[in-house]
Length: 59
Ligand SMILES: [Zn+2]
Image 1 (spheres, rainbow, N blue to C red):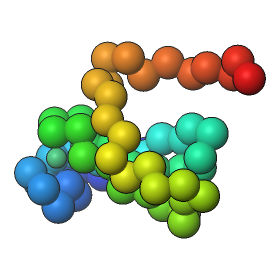
Image 2 (cartoon, protein in one colour):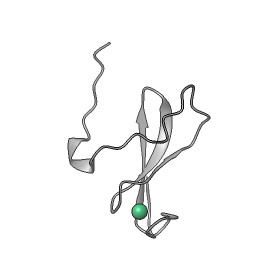
Image 3 (tube, protein in one colour):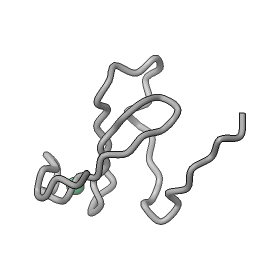
Image 4 (spheres, rainbow, N blue to C red):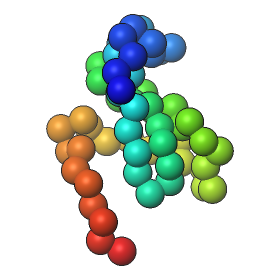
């Protein structure tokens, strides 16, 4: 799901994504992350580039 101009930081496009912590939205322009569910750990400072967006099921 892509939300156009929904980023609170740069008004960029937010892409809904999911990782081991749950669903989150990531800005394609500035990398801003917003968790959609309460995280188990404080992970709001995570940051990685959209180019490295790879699923990893390795435990
Ligand atoms: Zn942004």
